[in-house]
Image (cartoon, rainbow, N blue to C red; front, side, top):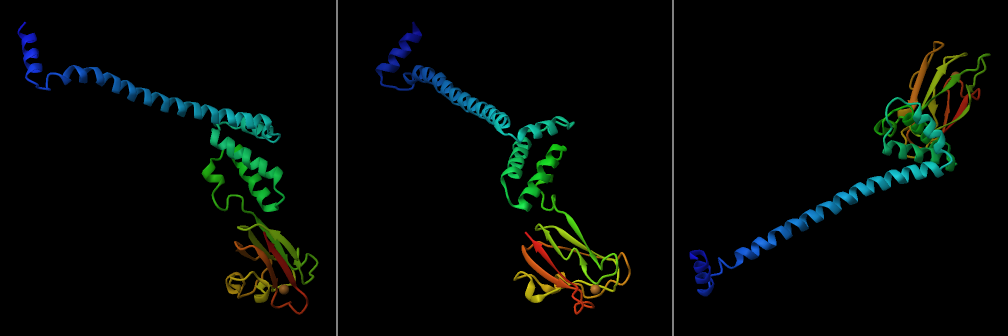
Length: 230
Ligand code: CU1
């Protein structure tokens, strides 16, 4: 009775403090509900997206002719292979099939094999992961003054190791006119010679192009060769 009177007085006197109270009480739960409603769709979208992603992966796995190889390789690994790695491996295997570039194919193949063997993405994507080293003999086994082979093709990031074989001393000097522009001839050439059999000289090549080189002591005898970096 006293309470009613107070409300009545409040309303009559035009004080708004009493009046909004029930309205606020009515609105607040709605606001909270709306917030909650917004949270759920976000969560649902995230979960759906993740599931769709997985479905996409398995759908691709099912339709891709190369994935069966990957699945078989993956099933041989001990650790679980995550969806990202599976996708990356699938991409790499597709690249192996579709690319006609020798180096792209080789690198993709190496990455896929690495993933299948249980290596993580950061490892197989690291520069140099798929790099190879090719060996060139200086002097043929029967003592001819030649590089064997005298023409090789490598991929950017690969290394060439020249091994002193027979008929030395030999060395490797690049033709200033026969290398890609911007490459320092001095930085890739030997300034001394290899006298002992089995001694080596190694160089990594990061710039694509054709590199002509020769052996300084035997240049006149025709001891020269070509290196192609793709
Ligand atoms: Cu030589």
